[in-house]
Amino acid sequence: MSTPVILEDLRSAFPGWCIWRSSAGRLWATRNGRHLSQREVDHGLYQTIDADDVTRLAEQLKEQRAAEQAL
Image (cartoon, rainbow, N blue to C red):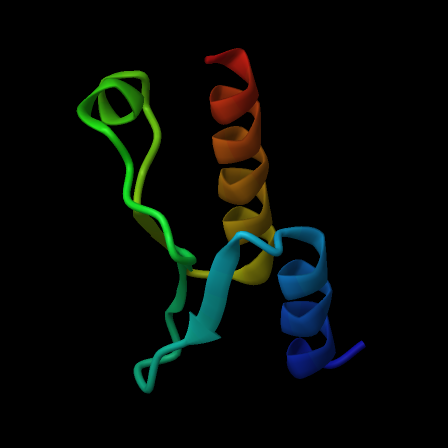
């Protein structure tokens, strides 16, 4: 599976996030259309995350989902 397909898979799995690869090759994800409250930030949620590879970005997105559900 090529990287663009994998990024599309991530976009489908995490619809609340805008996911892209920078010109430097780093992967980024930022929340779509919503800003976090201070309470959410205090509980470990991030507005934007980044990673070196698809696997680590997917892990971070899963961690963010779990942290959000724990609130």
